[in-house]
Amino acid sequence: MKYINLKMPEHSYFFGFAQTDGSLTKSSRNRGKLQIEIGEKDLHILRSFKKLFPLIYSSIRTRVRDTNFKKHYRSYVLAIFNMQFREEINESGIQYGKKSENNFPPNGHFCERDYIRGLLDGDGSIGMRLGKYPFVSFTVKSERLKDYLLNVIEKITKEKKKLDRNRRDNIYNIMLNREKAQKFINYLYYSGCLTLKRKFKKAKAILLWERPKSLKKIFRNEWHNWEDNYVLTHALEESCKYLKRTDKSVKMRLWHLKHKKNNANVL
View 1 (cartoon, rainbow, N blue to C red):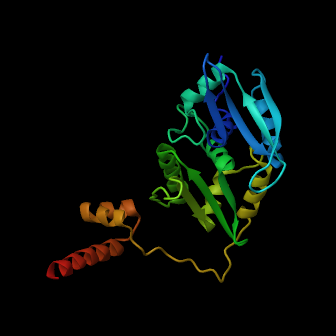
View 2: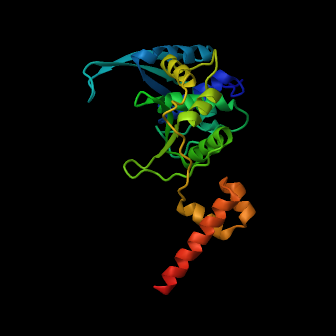
View 3: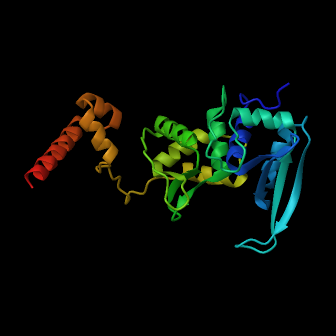
């Protein structure tokens, strides 16, 4: 008997949430636990998780402590100790240690949008930047998870992103804004889905957003180094298709790069 079935939307959501905001630990004599800690306002999601696995003993306890931001901060901790359950989620992609660099998308079949919504609810942000513009952001430590998310984002929004780890804490920051954020939110959140209530409220507000007439769209003209390298090493038609740029744009960039190189040789 398997405890977790990732073909179920709720289980896929739980998996994504636990992978980002949970901690899977083990010790001697096959002891260990999966632990998820959240603030008081999100207690409802832990109760939902507990109901997902009625055949497994789990507990929710209260924790009160002083933090850098608040004294007597109250949080709640869900703990699942069952060894078979731990082995199942570990084999499927939840690695030992919080924010593991080795996490990867689930093995086998799973519900993609529910899994990603779990990742976002667990360790991402959505809202209105400056109170005006929709945004979606992820913080990811795993290379494989980052590549997976970028592929899905390209599929949904048609935007191809290339990222480097930030220097401060060595993680990837994935950001979507305005209409692209809307498209992604529309894909992830739907009526009746398992999610954090506060984020579902923000998701609904984002989907109601309309671009102000005063905010003109700015079309991307800048070129990145990796794009330059691509057009210099691939055929024109292939470059246009892969980079999603016009024939004229690629030709102009090639002319610029070759002209720049010739000038450098003269100097």
